[in-house]
Length: 77
Ligand SMILES: [Zn+2]
Image (cartoon, protein in one colour):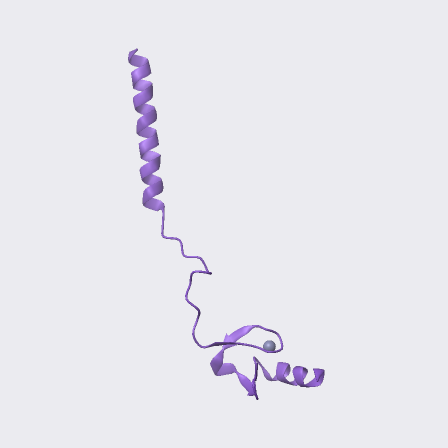
């Protein structure tokens, strides 16, 4: 009977130890989807890549990430 009680006590202690360790290491999860939208990014009309607005090449309502894509989009017309 003493052996059984000791076994149960050790099992409970191990469970509490792992539970505490897991609770302590749990960090608040922030996924990419939860992140606020990044300011100052535009989407290239040609390749649909997001890039900084400071690098934008704007032609009318179209925005391009680089001169090559502006020219490529113009060639597609
Ligand atoms: Zn592009």
